[in-house]
Image 1 (cartoon, rainbow over the protein chains, first blue to last red):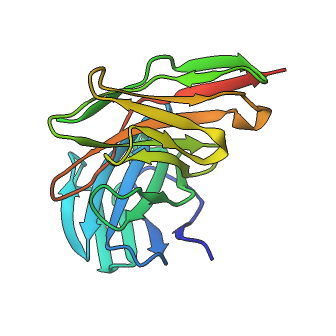
Image 2 (image 1 turned 30 degrees about the vertical axis):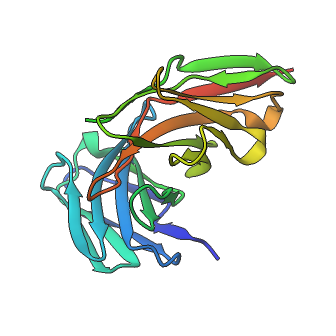
Length: 112
Length: 114
């Protein structure tokens, strides 16, 4: 009965590769998010989708491309991975404005 | 623009002592405020939220926080620390608008000693 699930949990790959992270929520929420947590634990918003529509796109390199096939899924595709992309990526969802966000367990991306 | 400042990147308390984690926010409109806890290698779990109903908010695991508009603060407290409280704590703010993104503070690592 996992609320927000991300796959994979760990991702180890080489520089220059392309990879995807998947996220699914079974809470019936309309809004989903991607956050990046760096090595110092700092969390920063990357993207947000509301009912399949992109509503937040923070200053993220265009190598990162989110895709939302339906409102329960938000995937993150990353092209040409760089060393600086190493981080933990969290997916989250909520009902809407002012409502608490529910987080997945994160995907730890390590670039060799 | 919204922002959050958490004073003290590390806080150490003895088991049974008061826990006080500080959070100050900046927001151009009435904010929504949250405290999250992160245990090692896990996601973020909501502790409590302030959404303008009551200034003293009670959360899970015995934590509470008080919203003080005059001080732009939302400090987290717990009367008696337990070893299981050791974790990273994040204060976050969300503003009204078309999107409810969270802006996080830099986090405070709570250590609980015997």
